[in-house]
Length: 389
Ligand code: NI
Image 1 (spheres, protein in one colour):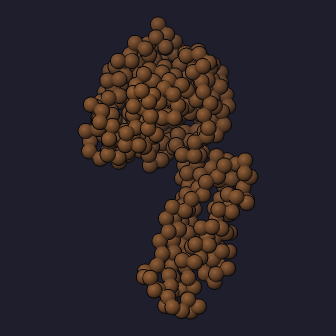
Image 2: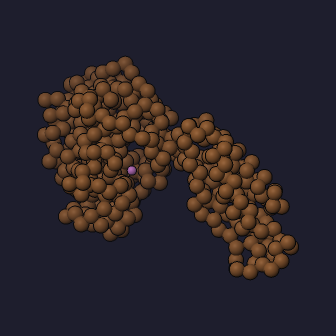
Image 3: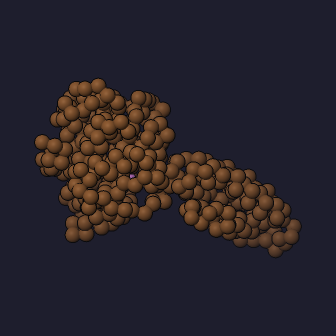
């Protein structure tokens, strides 16, 4: 039996596993029960298990022949959302929900482990199964990399179930797929005074207001319109009372983009506009810029390999195009260590109630896609190890 048939055969087990994980969601860094169950399932398959990054689990499967090392990654954390699906296997952990589909990721990767452990004789090299905590905080991948999860890995593949794609369809394209996510904090120093005598003070509220508008010119006038960039000020804190001129303001915002070169320049661009806008109003501005999550960029040749794996399994028609996503993924930290490919697996099926976007309290998936995810993970690993890419 080959990968596709093995995946179809374990579909009922996959549904059961997914429902178990769905029923028991745990938030970032607290995936204790989740990790224990994953470790238990891997051990049953004779896969060696290591615990890393607090609640992370890394399984290692060696093939019967020597070769390279490939990694497959699934994230395992849930969100703090009250589930409203009304499903019989809805969350039993009040206030938490697998609303991003990470329950499906765990299941698909365990499925791949099951498939690959039956195909040991066809594996030339080593497969690492990385079950990553705290993706929703964009912290888990970094920690796993620091603790050596990527040591010796020559290629990595990950996937995300996606509520906008029809169930069972897959999108894998080379180049940028998901945006970077960074944060900036701007502090404006003005001078307080009586609201009736603004000329005696320097109004931080006016400076902040002008700055919100001026910052958008980075997007509209400074960066190539063919290079997408989002700059959002999400929070402004300023002022004490209706009749007092505010002496200070703080702006808290985020930048998202796909081009690492533009990303590098953002702190300087923001600083120039903030300092000069403040100066125009006799105030001062201080900018702190925090590089957080890099953009997720697919390696050209690995994306091609993944596409061919999908074609081999389910035919050309199963591959669909998908626009770039301005959300981000800490999968990008792995791609700094080895060539990487990231796929989106469709789980949308309105007939089964699976029509809500990720992070919605009614989000659910068409479980028929589980075997597809498991097969794609497994086929990618086999093909990577049997190729010289
Ligand atoms: Ni997610």
